[in-house]
Length: 393
Image (cartoon, one colour):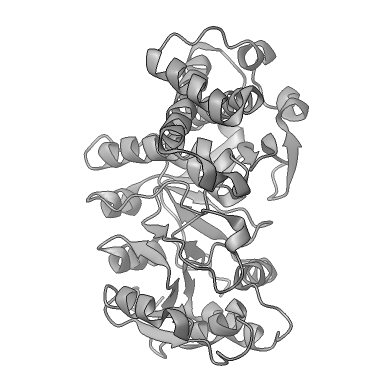
């Protein structure tokens, strides 16, 4: 931070000459942003090579530096959101996007359904670098470390290693004000299929919600559907950041969820949910429909528990944005669970059914948690409303 406590933000958009038009269009929505192209465009694409240059363009007077990749859509007031995020988490990395099928996406989804505005990211996973802000000293250090690693090419994996080495936490918003547009992948990521945010919103009120909303600092477990591989749980080891990723049935004894509640859900009485289940069964099979029900139930159950400690403010726009975030987070649950190679095959009706069936599972889990005197106290959910600077930079 500057001596007067103000955030001074510099910004870059990283791109390849083949996508320079995209980058310039994005930079036009980011006043003052510098477009940075691959310094060796005739060689095989290397995101880290370009990222090292982009992070190295931190302005000498900046307290923080943000780098955007060229294939994103952003909220109209994104730079104000980024500057206020830097002020709230001055010594941390702050990302503004999380893939819907990633561990960080699962954390953002849980926060969104629970009504929290921020969540601490997962350090063991790649860092989502589509839109990321770092304190200026860390930005310069990463630029130097990236330039010194010519054999590496993935900037998100390199960033994750760097942040762990620096002891720097990552925070992510719910909702995210950045969305992935997903054009041609120059970096060879086309095999990952359609990639979108776990919970995107750019409507008015998001900025105010993120400025004052609760921060989910720690939670004992996070439901996580490994795309195409069934429901899992990220289960914390003690009170540290380490987690075990376990199939849900193996994790169930540690969750405080009555086994019968999730294994014997009872009939689906809501006509819209019943129709959605039939459509999901028709396109993706009975087994997947059942797995999605379990996953949605666990998200709803844990979100209801977290919400007791992370309720949104009583005034609008906090509640309106919280409702929007909860709906979109639950709505992305189904498509994110589908195997990546199958997503493009799903019909428009199937996509709508996936969203509805995911929301139905979340609703059922939330309702079951509110009716059950299950274990779980503040000790397994840590929520902060005011963040202090982490002066490790």
